[in-house]
Image 1: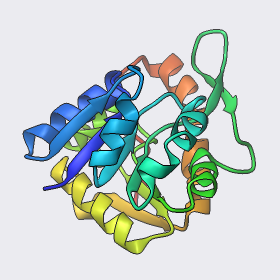
Image 2: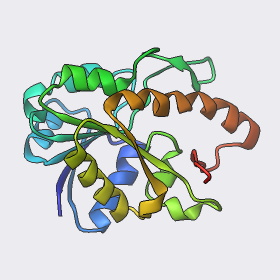
Image 3: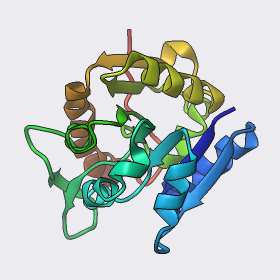
Length: 198
């Protein structure tokens, strides 16, 4: 089992930390306390970014040395929110948060995933009436395989996981967040995910 650091202790981070602990991983959760993120990242093999997307780049760039050689699983959506607090536009149009992180952290293996669903689905994909899809974007095949195995631990079936390719493909997955406010306004705050039907 992997030693995993979850950066961010809100709904997303807390949910993932609890689920990964239940299946036997050694998980630490870093909140906002000074030095907590650095300490957690330094000891982990896999680091999960569950920090707010509009501040993720700044926070994680400050951990460049602690993240060197680690797999960084980026779940965040970097958006400018509207008056109702829901995403209104992308913070990195023509790019993506994942690409910005990979550029800023060249010694880290960034993998984008699980950002195209509400947080509850991340750890309970079988709870939906239809099969959801988890996308993978990243430069390292080995890092993506580690993340694929972690997704399996969370209940994701192999056929529900789609590898989109290199880190530049994260911009497509991140753009899916623009659906979110409209889906929530039309159907309420119920669990949902993007799904590719074949």
